[in-house]
Length: 401
Image (tube, rainbow, N blue to C red; front, top):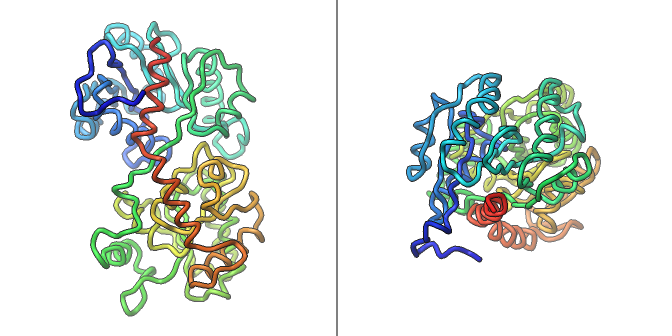
């Protein structure tokens, strides 16, 4: 039953929850962004007493983000030391904390603790396609996921796709609860806060986006870390196939280099339209909505995702979206997106071409932009971080019970 956010909650109904936020980097993406947004949604709930375990040098950020929570800066910063602390130091502190349930939001958990644990497993790519990751991470996270599947009281998965993959790869002794991610509707909106503000912001971010008259060029945008499973080299090749038909359009790759980013550089160097591919690196949070709502097309051709948050954020901004069939993005975006088979360069090129034509008012065989935009707004409206937090509360209460 939903909690009445306006009334007091008896102490016996509140969940005393701790969350390990020590893995969230300074510039969070993916699982780090999920952790930030979830904590923000939990900290305002009257039925949660929240305690956060941060790195020693990261307390201020979390105190500012969650002023009602108790923030304990106990974890060391280097990853090996932090993972060792999770197994040795954290269980001792949990035993004295008086909490009801602990949440490991990034695959791992303290393996020996008397406190019930919830673990978020974001995806099974370490099992499905280990070649997409560094070998050391494959070894670490395969073991962490297998341990969580056996020992966590509840596993949270961000999509049914991930839940099904987990059941296929691991023995699960606890319960699985699917909790979709949310979208920040205050930030991701089709309306720019100040008329003309997006063009000014994006022009400062990347001068190549702005024409001589100060207006933005039309562009296709990808937002995400440049890593193998995002299939960005294939997007570069698909864009090259339609670039001559749309000489005013740029391809913008917005995201930091991940492992394997050299394949993106090689793809850009190999195509004739490489000068129209703008690699702008990691984008500040304030600029991401501007990029999405200003785009002629948002392309998210990832081969595998646990959820695919950039796709949902694109829908919330009213952007035409092309993404990959048979993935979590299809589960979330459904009929609002144009879906193409994974690794199909020709199909992706055709979708880009059709959307670019439709965006000019020439709706083609992919269907009307307006209808897809309406469906996208409906989907985004259902996916809030408050709703995601509600699903997480089900997991916490199940674990504590």
